[in-house]
Length: 457
Ligand code: LLP
Image 1 (cartoon, rainbow, N blue to C red):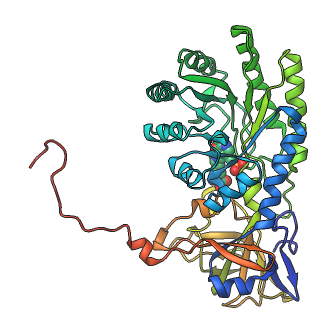
Image 2 (cartoon, rainbow, N blue to C red; image 1 turned 180 degrees about the horizontal axis):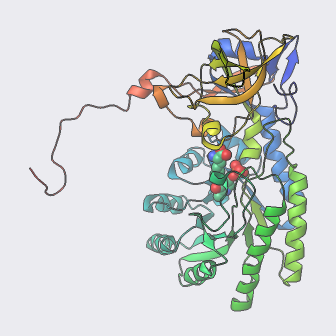
Image 3 (cartoon, rainbow, N blue to C red; image 1 turned 90 degrees about the vertical axis):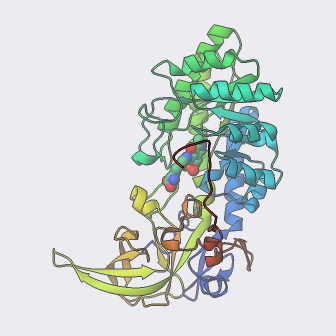
């Protein structure tokens, strides 16, 4: 089990009072009684503080050259989140028209939205341009022409960034490392594709090239990879100045800042990582005799990740004897890979705590599993849990806010859990629990009909 409520891992208002865990000044057991389990619980105070601290750290690191801290909607978005992000002065990074629809639903300031994606559809591009988003981050040669054409048809000059691939191999899980050469994202700097893309954008009067972008991966602990990526982007800024005699004004360094999931994790604070990156950006710009560009970032996980926890109820337990003579205790909870796919997908590790009471029982070698019909439906592979855990106990997994609910599925026709927001002793759902009716609502009965022009009839 995690060192009890390590503040690096747990939301800021998580406490234990008389053995019972509370968040936002509400007992976890009361939340479970009221909203059921599994449930995501979002600590509003924690979320607001994190959003504010990243916006502030960017300001402090870059001063008047601070661009926008765009919250990465993919980590978790809802209309309430979008409103808070706006109130905290951040922008929004959306990567589909679904995420854009949430922004539009709350009238999110268009100029503070950027649209991402390596294969944006024509209609996604059109919707973004219609809403007048500040920037579209272009990711392929075909997309340069596509965005230019659609903007031209709408008589708009669209601000764009080019997503470059700086060839930086960030030290993280392969599936979430995006800045090395062999990935689908961005124009490679090393191969010359980045410069070709610059030249191609320049041909279009309906595009305004505002600057360059890179996102090198996710859950990155040290600033070194961000520094290297920034310095490679700056080399292209210098080349651009040499070629065209003017300087590009914007540099977007993407997201990917790590959070703590385990007691042993030591992520840097916003101030630490951004001040190191700022120092490098300033030094590289000075060396290249460039003015400092406006520097933006796209944090997702660091803002919402630690703000949310998942409450589960234990349903069954069983003991197995392992080949080496030791025992493993399986503790099954009422959610699993449908609300947290990260352990199965990336081998991600989490902490866990007994929430409805404290226990001084001896611990045992345990594995926390979900209720899906798969052996790989594991929430925590290896953990020491008190040996007196029984069905009905509540287990809480911290740091599930990022890529938890947002990657949740209906596998096994499980309904997706609600997101309950807690603040100062009050709780409310901001996303309700799905129902079987929701699941069945997509099913329709249609008469077979002829479609298209021909075929065998
Ligand atoms: N900007 C871009 C262009 C991105 O692709 C991403 C994440 C971010 C910003 C935000 O990264 P963050 O600060 O949240 O690390 N599902 C994976 C993570 C995939 C990240 C995809 N892109 C996971 O659960 O670890």
